[in-house]
Each structure stands twice: as structure tokens, then as C-alpha cells.
Image (cartoon, rainbow, N blue to C red; front, side, top):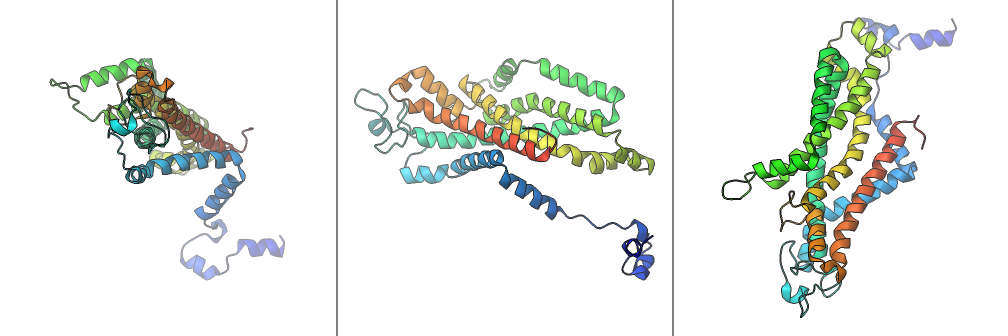
Length: 331
């Protein structure tokens, strides 16, 4: 053994190591999260796909946050009607300009302001619903994949049963049950939409996480943890979960735009966010139902472009993160 090898295995202060009861030959340097964070930041900066998605998502979030500022600047609220200024002499909505950046709708409301507030509604529904689905699906996927046997069979059966329910029919039933005797909603419709989307989203997270756990539970580091007597909870939380989280977070970015489109679909069909609260879905529905978008196309293009940009931004971001976190994946 060379001198360099001996020096590398002997601690700088053997007496201190012996006094602490620690085996000096098994000491390892502590890892810090700052190095990983810096590498991730550099990878994001170098990846144009991720940067493009991040820029679009940031713009959408900022637009939603600044909606009250633009409303105060223009003097137009999201539900206020300005029939004299927003409609011409024959009742047709005015186009962009004249105090309305994207024109007005059939009720004289500012399309631009309503589109910005629709951003808040879409994010308010999409982010909590996707996050709840992530937590529920990851938990059940960990349990099913690690324990296997009957536990896996029961969870898999629950997933199959959940997927057998049609999305729109279930949403219509829950909305109908949410109506009281007076015809008013018992629970806030936004909460109902979040519940419906969560019920149909957690299954995808559970399937992905379950497959990852099945592939990891027979890996050498898991077998080593079992051999030293580590508890199942510790193995799941400290050994398996850190390897599953990146995949689940990437899929969170994939599922979020789908859930935003799901909210817009429910609102378009009249079973989601209730007017006059602005939502991209009910704004598109109003424009299509009145056919006024033929003379004022921004009634349709405003929320439509916002929806497309949001979905595009999150898809680019999730695809870029998948490229970064999975070095073996080819573009």
C-alpha cells in the first residue's frame, strides 16, 4: 500500500475519531444539496427547451398575478358590464382599442381583463388538483409497488375501477349532487372541479410510481438496507422515495396542462366554473354560443391563445426537465 493510500484512509485527527466511537475507515464526506442544485441550475440554463417553457410559464403566472393591477389601470372589473362603451349602436361588441385592449364581449365586459382573471382560475384549479393527485398517487404507488402481493392487487383493482368511470358523466353527476333544493350550489363549484380532476388524475401517478418502485425494490442498495435491519418505512422514505420523486415531478408538469384543459372543458360544457366568474372555458363557450366572435374574433382568440400558451409552456418545461433528470433519455 502506498503512502498516499495510507494517508487517504487515516483521518486528520485519529484521537478525535476514536473518542467519538466512529470507525475512521468508514467515514465519508457529507453531501450537500447546494452542489446538486447548482448542477440542476446550469443544466436548465443550457437547455433551450426548458428555458422556453420556463419563460412561458413565468409569463402566464405573472399575468395572473397582475390581473388586479391591469383591472385597476383600465378601470374595468372582470364581471363589470360597460354596455355603452363596450357595445356599438346595434349592440355588437367593440374591437381592440377604445379603452378595451382585446375588445368587449356580448355583455360589454373587457375580454382582456377577463382573460387575465381566467388565468387565475385555471391555475387555482389546475395546480391544487394536480398536486393532490401527485400526493395520493405517489403514496398508493409506493405502497403497492413495495409490498406487492394482495396489497398491490387491491390498489391495482382500485385504479382499474376508477379509470372505468367516464370523466364527463362523473362530473355531471357530482355537479347535480352539488345543487340544493333552491337550485344553488352547496359547495363552491371550483372545489367540485378540483375534486373531479383529482379523482381522475391520481391513477396515472400511482401507475408510474408503482412501476418505478417495483424496479427499485430489488436493487442492491434496497437489499443492503433490508440486510442491516432497516424498517420498511425507513426504506420507503429514505431509499426509494428520493429515486421516485424526480419522475413524479416531471409527470406533474405533464399532467398539469391536461388538468387545465379538463377544467376548461368542464366550464365550456357549463358544469365547471359558473359565470359570471371568468374562466377560459366559459369564455370560449360564450363566444361560440353567441356567434359574436365573427365580428369580434378576440372574444374567442383571447382565452384560446392563453389556453394554448399555458399548455405549451408546461409541456415544454416538463419535457425539458425530463431530458435533464434522465440522462439516458434521447431527445
